[in-house]
Image (tube, rainbow, N blue to C red; front, side):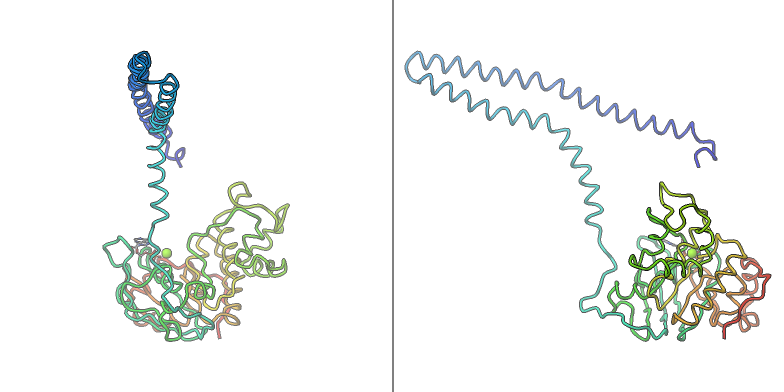
Length: 379
Ligand SMILES: Nc1ncnc2c1ncn2[C@@H]1O[C@H](COP(=O)(O)OP(=O)(O)O)[C@@H](O)[C@H]1O
Ligand SMILES: [Mg+2]
């Protein structure tokens, strides 16, 4: 990034600036030590002189024994040494306190989303998802990201979410697995508020492919089997085929054992997305959420993924949410949610929205990539 924007010079200066101020502070510390330590040592030695002088005189007068004087002096040194050591340790203590403050910032951070006392386990999903006048504002933000969103899905439906960038599509997706809790209103699954369920049971039934996919360092196989580490190679291959990444993986010299992550093989954005899809398909989801998950995949591959997912969604999941980029997804969706600036401005099927919403037509035209191949129709 720095090279692309030709900012080497400025970055170097920034680094040198920080470095200089570090050097300056260190020199200040060393100066402070240099100035104070001779004084401290002088004082402590003067104390010895006083002890020996005053005590020696007392010994000569016979008021004090030599043994007592030696013992007194030894005790005095034992006390002075640790005091001096504290002086040496002071800078290190200050540094540690600063580091500790930063560690505690993380350790003490409030966990905002947690199980309610007596949270119930999410066991099975009928597939009826209801948003009831949902309003949502991100923590620390002054603007509402969602305003009065209401809709209801029926079991086994495919829901396409459509809207401009920043209209709140990802935010809707985040509320179902409770990555955030609603500010007002409620999100319900089969009539139950999602806040009644325990987080782990709720999330383990929801398969999410995020807009930005993160792979962990390890092999491709361990990444795909992230949710089910004991999955067999056959299972891993099956989901990789659905996500249209199997052939690419086989073309690698090490196949499924190829390392990914910092020291691993380089992957394109589209390849990462497809691995993320495969990873999600290997979970026990009954609700599937695909957030812009094929945005970096070419149109042909995306169509293939869509076709494979379509077949899969019909047989396994109760309800699927897809942030749509393809006309085929929109056309076959049972319900389309049209978002605009945090509001749900229209909902319905492709045919009904074409007839009723001018915005729908405009967004379709500007956002949706054309589909050359005929798409498989959902029953
Ligand atoms: N973590 C966040 N904190 C604060 N505001 C956010 C956060 N994520 C998104 N937003 C805001 O919420 C709005 C909706 O964002 P998002 O749901 O990501 O849109 P979309 O997915 O439709 O592009 C945007 O205005 C965005 O700036
Ligand atoms: Mg988004």
